[in-house]
Length: 241
Image 1 (cartoon, rainbow, N blue to C red):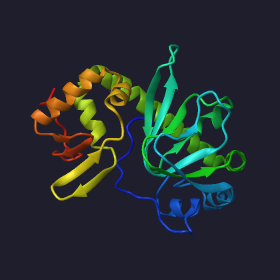
Image 2: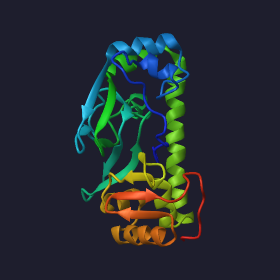
Image 3: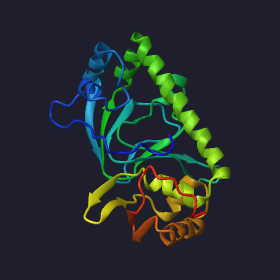
């Protein structure tokens, strides 16, 4: 996954929440999957909460199910040869994580850690695998999701050469979870400057300069980790390059 989707849509609330209810509300990864299949997975579902910094799963381990994010943000991590942690993606509400290994049959090729307070639904390995085996539509759906993620990853590599750091930084900021308050839209950035640099493929000093350029151009106003967005999320800007 690349940049998380805008988070205006929210997961259904209530004790009766289920995979089927989310799918019927067009929320989450199983939208469009046959009702019978979605309903069958609910027996293997458990609602979970994670605190910031808690690990959902680790790179190299066998998969133990999949996680559908209801609220919050997840960092997808890989480690280099020198043991340095790299953020290879971010996942937000409606995204599924941990699913790729179910298609490859191998161990998990990345880890996942809560970047914020997190609400997820965990589907057991048995429930998800059984549904994949029984329903070709779900298997096709899962393969399409992986293909989209690969496309997003390729786009990120292209953008590293075609877009400036301020452009990529603003694109990320306008797609992070945000709150509407008096004075506009505010983003509580859940990543440190080092983590932002890791995700963007640059240095922390370059991130700091990028934030200053965005502020000088009137795109954002910074208050520590809180950033007020001064541009529309759909507005394209190139004057801060």
